[in-house]
Amino acid sequence: MPVAEFIVTAAQAWLWVGAAVAVVFLTFGMDRIDEDARGAYVFRPLLVPGVLLIWPLVLWRWWQIEAQAAPWAARYRPVRASYGVAVIAMSVGIILIVALGLNARQSWPADTAPVQLSAGTDG
Amino acid sequence: MSVKYVPVQWNPNKWLYDAIMLAAVAAFLWVFLYLAPQHDPAISAQIHNARAFGACAFMMLTVILCIGPLARLDRRFLPLLYNRRHFGVMTALVALTHAGYIVNWYFAFSSTNKYVGLLGANTSIGQVAGFPFELLGLFALVCLLILAATSHDFWLKFLTPPVWKRLHYLIYAAYFAVVGHVALGILQDQRDHTVTALFLGGAAVVVALHLGAWWSERKDTADASGAWAKVAPTAAFREGYARIARLPNGDRVAVFLMEGQLSAISNACAHQNGPLGEGKIIDCLVTCPWHGFQYDVRSGRSPAPFTEKVPTYRLRITDGVVEVHTDANPPGTYVDPLPLPKQEVVA
Image (cartoon, rainbow over the protein chains, first blue to last red):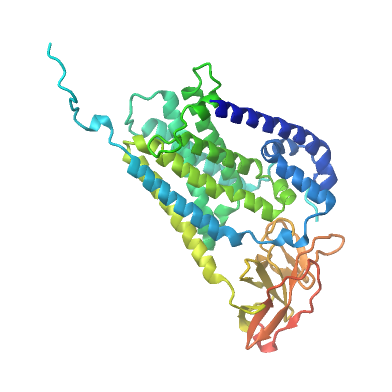
C-alpha cells in the first residue's frame, strides 16, 4: 500500500504542476510561439487535458521554439522508419501474452464434479 | 499560410463518419447489454455495464488499428483514415467509462482511497495466474487519454509531426496492454466463447494486417546504389503529377513532372506532413491535398508572402531511369529542373 499511496500522490502532484503549466502556456506562452493561435481562444480549453498529461514535453517544445534550438531536418525526419520495430514488438508481445493467458486459464469449478478431499466424519 | 485554430473541424463527410461511428457504438452496447445471452446471472448491473463498455472499447481499438494498415494496403480504405482522430477520442471516452464502472464498484466501498485500492489490492506481478491485470488496463487507459488529449491540430504543429507521431506510437503499446488486460483478466473466467472468439480474432487480424503492411512497405523501398536511389523509368511520369519514392532511410520524395521537366521535393508538407506527392501542379505550384498549402516544386518554397519551405532533392537520369540523390537539400533550396527527353512526356 505505501507504494500505491506514493504513486497516487505522485500522480496528483503531476497533475497540479500540469495545471500550473497549462495556465501559463495557454494564456501567455502559445501567443508567443504560434501565430495561428493569436486571437483564437475557444479551442484553448480543449488543450488543457493534453498539457496536464504531457507538460514536460510542452515545456521542452516551448523552450525549443523560443530558442530556435530544433535542427531544420528534424521536422521532416520520417517516423515510419521505426514502424517495423513497433509492429514486431506489438505482435510478438500479443502472441506471447495471449498464449500465457490461455495456458494459465483454469476450468471453472462448476464444470467439474466435486471431489471429497478427506474422509470427514459421519453424523 | 495561416489557418486559425477552431475547437473541432467538421464538414459533411466528418458528420457522416461520426454519426455512423456513434450509431455503431450505441448498437454494440445495446446488443451486449440487452440481447446477448447472459452467461453469469450472478453479476450486478454495474459489472455488466463495465463489461459492455470494456468490450466496446476493445473492439473500437481493434477497428482503429486495422484502418491504418488497410489504407496502406488498399487505397479504397483511405476515407476511413481521414477522421480517425474522432474515432480515437470516442474510444478513450468509452474506455474511461469502463474504468469508472470498475473503480466505483470494486474499490469504492472501503475507507481506502479507491485509486490506492486499485494499485495496491493485488501486487502478484510475478505470476501469470492472478496477475494484476488491472495495471495493464490502467496503462492502456493512460495511453489512450494522452492520444485523445493531443489529437487537436494544434498539437501536431506545436510538437512537430515527427514528435507527435512518435508520441502516438503509444497506440501499439496500448493495444498490447489491452490484449494482456483481457487475456489475463476476463479471459480467465470467460464462459461465453463468442466473446473469446471475437477477442482472439480481433487481435489476430490486427497483428496480421500490421505485419502485412510493414512487409509491403519494405518491398516498396527504392533500390539505391551509393547515394542515388531509383524512382521510376522516365516513361512513367505524367505531366502535372508526381511519382513518390521511399528512400532507404525512410524519407519519401515526390518527383514532379512540370512542363516537361522533373523536380523533386520532400513528400511531407511543412504544415502537418500531408502527402504533397498526391497533389496536382497548377500554375507551377503543387497544392497539399490535406490543407491546401502550396509550394513551388523547383525551390520547395510557398509563394510570397507565405514562408513555408520543404527540402528539395537532386535528380539525374541513368539508362532511362530517374534517380534521386538520397541527401535532402535544406528547405527552400532551388534546384534546376531536369529536362525529360521529349518523347517520354505523357500528356
